[in-house]
Length: 51
Image (cartoon, rainbow, N blue to C red; front, side, top):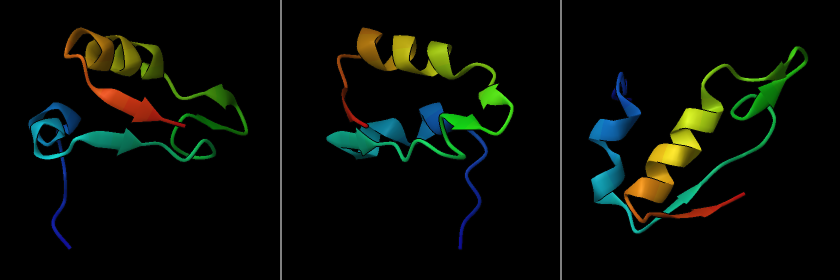
């Protein structure tokens, strides 16, 4: 399996981005730090997202 170090480097390869909520968006401590910026970036890039 290839390690992905930068999410921004791969989004252009996909038409739709799916997110699993637990462990990706939030964990037992609450929202994953910076996840809001991820969605802001995807919106700026006009990318489709599905939760």
